[in-house]
Length: 357
Image 1 (cartoon, helix red, strand yellow):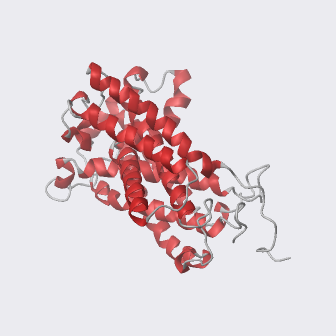
Image 2 (cartoon, one colour):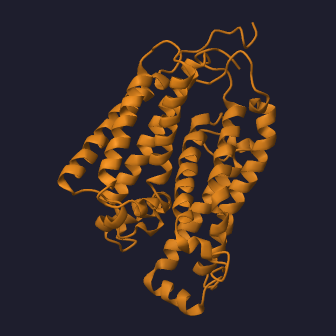
Image 3 (spheres, rainbow, N blue to C red):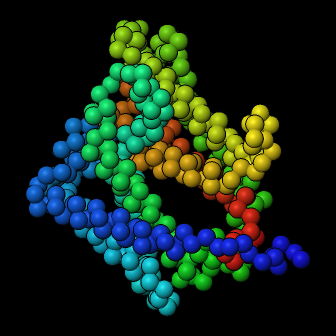
């Protein structure tokens, strides 16, 4: 019996659940946005955000923000409900309109609403969790875990759920497998061999960019004022900011090494030094899900930076070794996303639902 003739394993039901989950999540937040519109309280963006200089929502007046969110969230919830119904194949204009709005709303929620704070929080999270019992770092957690930060993470979750719902619906209405997206004919660039070729380039770019950022932060921790003045380094040493930078540099380095794993053997099978796991296959989702989340967070942070006037001074008189690596960020998120997708294409194997592969 060949692989293609083998009976498929029990199919996962997650693709079918994405649309109802997205509708419920977006509907809940849409109601909260309506309450903010009525009461005039609870909107954490724009002029209400004291740290929103690198967020595109600063361009939206506060009085328009809550009704805008309510309209986007509630209509997106309705669209997700429409996608959850096993209807006949829609007409081309209807399919284009519904999919277009779904992807636009998903991109707005996952990439525009959040900013660099989501990425920074992902980097600081290990330090905050491990150091909390010991009172280090000496920060006020109530000033970190705010309503504004929570709203940003909620938007990312809603955007990703909606994106999954749209993708599943598009596959269903295109007569391909809703789980893997494969049809009767496989596109050449999605074959494992092709993905291995272009995936290496994406991995190289996605790993190099965070390492350039980490080098400056490690230099500061070692007392080397790389790209900054000695006075500024002394100030950061006195207030502990240098160690916060070291933590972000360590997070970036770990991320770069894990990115390399997307094309290394140890990214497919656990290395021998991992007792109890040595030699076992690395679950595909164990690599794909975290890498996808980081790619989304990096892209969202980059969009916020591109909308800040300060970013456009980095390549001119404002250029230095401290801020220079940020000029490469626009390529980081897309490169990591492509690298992750190439890894998925190489390792996805036979589909549980349709048996293809």
